[in-house]
Amino acid sequence: MEGSVRLLACLVCILPMGSLVRTKRDTTGNLPDTEVHSAPTQRWSMQLPAEVSATAGEAAVLPCTFTHPHRHYDGPLTAIWRAGEPFAGPQVFRCAAARGSELCQTALSRHGRFRLLGNPRHNDLSLRVERLALADAGRYFCRVEFAGDVHDRYESRHGVRLRVTAAPRIINISVLPGPAHAFRALCTAEGEPPPALAWSGPALGNRSAGAPGPGQGIGHQVTAELPALAQDGRYTCTASNSQGHAEASVYLFRFHGASKASTIALLLGALGLKALLLLGALAACASRRRLEDPVTQDTPPRSQAQESNYENLNQRSPRSPPAATCPPRGAPQTQASACAP
Image: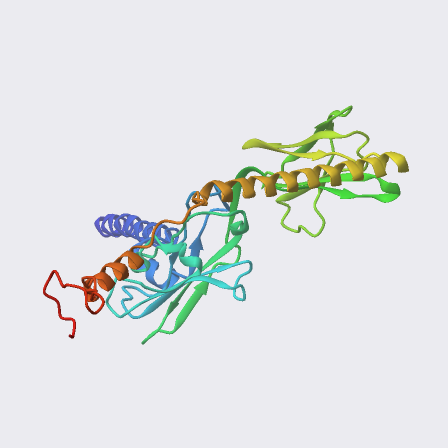
């Protein structure tokens, strides 16, 4: 009897211990994030939002974080961003970090507007895009490459869609000749969302006539046409969307035909007016020259050079005394003279 009691006590002790071991095995099997299972089951992955929206002219941040199966990797790495499609799209940014360095040296930045915002050593490849334009809209894909002892790489397959919004801007408005001596007007605007266009003008009121522009695959541009302009005057195109509105105007003035005699008279009148203007200009030039010329005297001034010569002549040839006259022979001489006897 005493032996049976001891055997039963041992069985009672063994059963709870077995139950405890089974419970511990099941619990660790259902926790993949525990330290024991995290290293073998960790694999490549990338986390990106589905869409990022920003306004044209401003900056946008494209987030991208990743995980990899290599614990404590500090070898060389390269961070890459592509546009359009994964694996084959054109690169818009690329940087490389040396072994043990957290500084990723930029090797490529399209138009100098792409800059790495995250730290690849901390599994962050987030990218900043400056001075957004409508052409920047589309999908972007991040990629990381390990080199050195471990050669491994991973790239996002779906990427992140960048949506760029912009207020309307009219990029062209013109009047073109149409069939049967008529005229038509065209207005092209861009914006995101694509703007709605409306025409207003003489005997027209507000008339919506928006249509996608031909050959515009992106969908940012819209063209509206007025097929026939019935009256002369000002025609205004207005573009509007949720971001704002813009407008531009064009003027139409047609030359109405006149009779042959009226045309000839108009041409002769224009020629006569030009001739009168030309004569007036010539007369003004002649008067100006006459006023600028000095007034001349009728009697020329006395020459100083002649007076000088005359004085020199008097100095060189002094006036001689009159010659003495001799009386006839036999007459008495009153004065002493040099007459010969």
